[in-house]
Length: 136
Ligand SMILES: Nc1nc2c([nH]c(=O)n2[C@@H]2O[C@H](COP(=O)(O)OP(=O)(O)OP(=O)(O)O)[C@@H](O)[C@H]2O)c(=O)[nH]1
Ligand SMILES: [Mg+2]
Image (cartoon, rainbow, N blue to C red; front, side):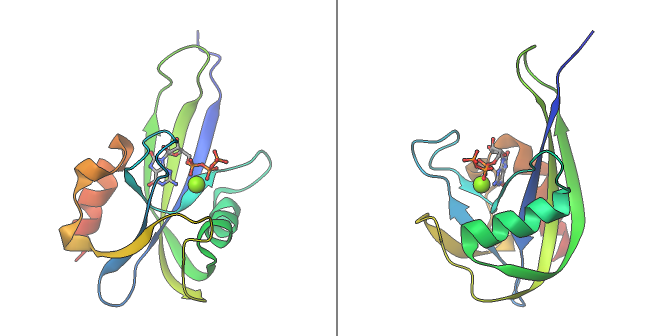
């Protein structure tokens, strides 16, 4: 029997009109430090994933998002009793206000989708990156 809870994560794939996505480098001292990631973070209790998406993108990259859609969900079962299952909600963000920047001091950059290397991201991003490449 499993009593593991599920930690949901809301992630924004911010895509511009020239097929570039806005990506941050994870700070070195964190889990997957030095790897690339899309902005986002943990959905809080009593919060909807899309509300977490709006909150995290504002907190992390100063973006007020206007048009977005759920693009992909990735789930992973907990690797032990005392860890949560995780569920990643990846949203495509296609319209926004403001110019994104690394509000928390993180290194950020626009990357052309076709040039993305899935090996530079956490393992749960591999499928969504393949799907992203098939879009363009
Ligand atoms: N933001 C983000 N997190 C990802 C991605 N892929 C992926 O596996 N994750 C995982 O999702 C989890 C939560 O992300 P996070 O560290 O950004 O959480 P957060 O913003 O709430 O930060 P905090 O824990 O410091 O409050 C991490 O374990 C991270 O490794 C991704 O592309 N973007
Ligand atoms: Mg985060």
